[in-house]
Image (cartoon, rainbow over all chains, first blue to last red; front, side, top):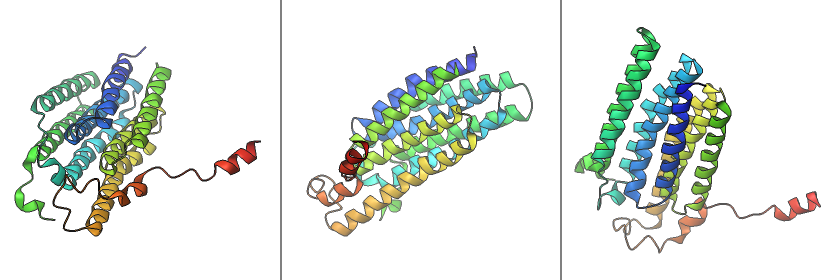
Length: 151
Length: 117
């Protein structure tokens, strides 16, 4: 029995299950915020899986997700800006919780993998993920300037 | 432990795929499709296929929603450039966009029944 795999299973069953429910129901703002948070959730789960399977190469999946996930959210923030403008979705508390959880898990993984290139790579993925999450949340909350919205 | 992970991922993929079919609005469908792509990537990771998961992430999380949203934009702009500004009242009047993104009508049911019977 592997503790990392148990943590990944709990995270996937609870978090991603709630994310599927949140993205399939409710107003549009909540759905977009849920999609943004799903990126952080799945990336952390993949990092936990990489540690659980003892395959450091799987960290590359988390690296790609931490780069592409916020870009996907920015696509929504740009193309759904007309629909989101009347009620811009703000979720500062959820963003802070996601950032704190990501930081905690990444630091735990870096400590477990020992000092070296792997730990640096994990910390880089965590920093990219937190930065992307905050940037995407601010873009969803109306961070896109007015002159960029023309057509 | 790995069996439990596989079961969890399969259930998540089934749930999100059902939600993607059940949601009718194409823009919201794109959001569900993004989550479906992420859960598929986790499933491939659990199946020890990281290369497939990498390409699934690139396609599922960015390219598919971008294509869907750009297509919806294009269709709406072609339907009426003046009504695009108002988001509220013109949503119900354009049923032309619905059959394009909805599920395909069952066409091969009769042939399948004949093959099995």
